[in-house]
Amino acid sequence: MNKNTLPFIAACLGMFLFGIVMLSVGTINTYLITKFQLNNLAAGSLASLLPFGILLGSLVFGPVVDRYGYKLLLIVCTLLIVFSILLIAYTETFRLIQLGFLLIGFSGGAINGGTNALGSDVSLENKSAKLSLLGVFYGIGALALPLITGALSEYIAYQSIILGIGLFLLLPVIYYIAIPFPPPKQQQGIPLKKVFAMFKDKVLILFAFVLFFQSAAEGISNNWTTNYLVNFHHLSDSRALFSLTLLVIGMTGGRLILSVVLRNARAIRVFYASCLLIIASLLLISFSGTLLWIRSGMVLLGMGLAAGFPVMLAYVGERYAHLSGIAFSFSLVIALLGNTLMNLLVGFVSRTWGIQHYISILIAAALVMLLLASLAYRENKRNPLKQRK
View (cartoon, rainbow, N blue to C red):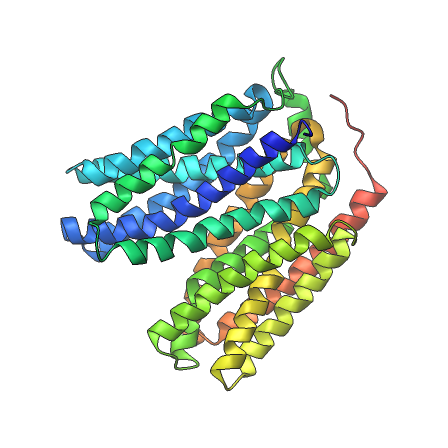
C-alpha cells in the first residue's frame, strides 16, 4: 500500500465528518428551539456563531498543520466537536449552548481546511482529481444525515439522536491515533518572511478571489434557492426544498465524475467548462416553465459548482507545497468572506428589486470566476514559484 493512502483516507474521513457536523447543526437547532422555546433572535444568534467559528478555524488551522502536522489538529478538533455536541445536548444554560456552536464552527472550519491541505500534500499527482474525490465525502455525509435523522426521529428522541451523532464521531479518532501522518513541513518554526511574501503574491491572491466568488455562488445557491423557487416559480415549500437537495446531489455526483475526468483532462479547462455550465443551468432554471426542467437545472448547477474548490486549491497546493496549510488558510478565509458578503448583497438586492435578481448575481459571479481564473492561470505559468523547504 502506498504510504500516502492511509492519510488520504484520514482526510476523506474528516471531510465526511464535516458534512455530518454541518447538517447535524440543523437537527440540533430544531431540538433547541423546541426545548428552550427560542425566539428568532436567539435562534439567529446560534446560526451566526457557526460561520464565525468556521472563519476562526479556517484562519488558525494553516499555521498549526505547517508547524505541528495534521494528527494533532484532527484529533483535537474532532474531540472538541464531540464535547460541544454533548454539551449542547445536556446543558440547561444558553450561554454554554452558544459556546458549543462556536466550538463546532471553529473545529469544523479547521477540519475542513486541514483535510483539504492534507489531501493536497499526499496527492503527488492528480491533485485536482484527488481533492474532487475528497469533496464527494462531504456530500455523502451531508446527504446521509438528513435521511437517517428523518427515519429515526419518529422513534427516537432528538436528544438521543444528538448523543448518537456525538459518539459516532469518536470512531475516526481511533483511526487518526493509529496511522502515521506526513511530518510537519516547518518543524523549526514558521518562516515569517516567506509568509509575508506569500500574502503579496499576485497569483495566490487571484486564486483566492476565484474562491471568493466560488464560495459566494455556493452560499447563495444554498441559502436563496428555496426563496427564489417559492416566490418566482411559485413552487410549494416541499418541492423547493427537494430541488435544493438535488443541488447537493448534483455537486456530489459532479465531484465523483471529476475525480475521474481530472486524471487526464487539463484542470483549468474543466474549470472553464464548469463556469459555463453554471451559467447555462441558471438560464435553464430562470426560463423554465416546468418542474422537470427546474430540477434538471438544479442538478446541473450543482455539477457546475463542483469543480471550483478542488481545482483552485490544487493550484494553490502546487504553488505553495512548503507552506500549504497557511496558503489554504489564506484562500479559505477569503472564500468565506466572499460567502458572507455576497449573501448580504443578495439579501439587499432581493428586498430592493426582487428575488429574481438572484439569478443575475450568480451569473455575474460565474463570469468573474472565469476571468479571474484565466488571469491566475496565465500568471502562474508565467511566474512559477521556486519552492524552498
